Picture (cartoon, rainbow, N blue to C red):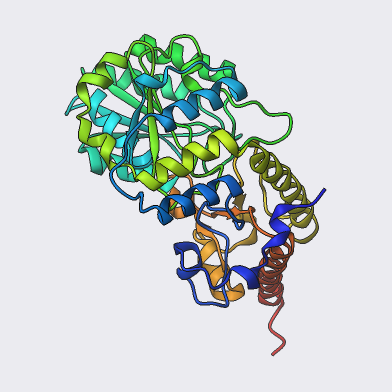
Length: 397
């Protein structure tokens, strides 16, 4: 089976004028920001080009995007959504900020699990809310006991907690199970916590793994989810997202969020996302197969060339969270790999507490590029090992 990521090598992409390719000098291989090294689904390309040719770049209108997400969710996840209850917004993080501000009193506390996708760390500042961080388990999963203790402590002070959930989880690639999410919803109900779930990576799950929408579990009726087609269909620059309320939060969202929020999404983004969800399934399937092949390749490369690096193969996303502490490269191995091997990785320090000694690697790229990256990283690790050996030798003088 043809791997779609093999169609675009480093040489083909290096001239792109997007952030991923402009953040570093031309000799650096960028493996950081979460976008894929591929092209658009053909129906999306045709729809966008046709709209531009007709000059249809005005303010957004209509319900095509909510209707497309409702159809997609029903088919993929057996999750019924009423498209008339959804609200447009600029992107997922902006939607998270709007909802967190809506449901959390001014003296309330946001709860964020770590390590976490870096923009989550900006949400307390954007919403002017206090924050409590809760570490994931050693297996990279939700620590329900720690969350319960945090909720209880916040409630003991007479304050309301709001959990900002990442589902699937970035950077570890965990796909929370229905049992985990049901237990979380039970905790939220027990402590009166609100939950806002970022589900931008929902369609990107690996073979044998099932994505569970948080709003589909019992007890999540007062929660919210924010969805976007941008990650699954490689549309991060065409801004659009949808806020999905739980069954008991519909009136709160309708009355609490001003209509101007819906106007913040790009009309071109709305068009592209709606077409992707409605007509891009074959493209998505092809790329999910490519990502599964790349994940397997990365596993082999790490086992052969960087066996000291610890990781768990992600269940979802195209992101690998690599524990490099055994390589003795310090708290920020990404800086060392950049300097010594010309590989641009996401620094674990940017993911908040628990990120020290880690890097995040984006494997949605050509297999040849992935191979070259791990080879370059091995040269750094080998050099560091040689330094340790030489440093341990007795002085001959």
